[in-house]
Length: 115
Image (tube, rainbow, N blue to C red; front, side, top):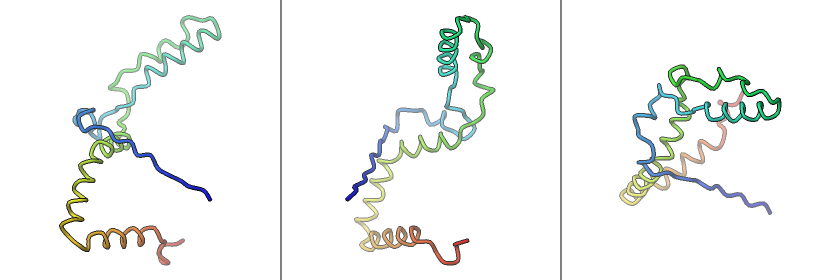
């Protein structure tokens, strides 16, 4: 028997400013990793000037990361969303049955949706 479990890590809503998580912002900074790569390359080849121009990436040149930002926002509101769902489940007796029905319906493929 194989048992699977999911570890869901949540972060506090105050960890990141919400303004930085807009869809037009970039929150992945490759400069740190490029500097690590340069250090590794220079140590391997002995060249101290290896790819110095690449590390000087300007934040304005980086493309937006809306999917990454959305994932961070989802992790930030997980606790709030859970408390709202629990209060709705306690207030409406058939809420749990409706959620179960939606989960089963979305999990099982519909015959007309198959290609």
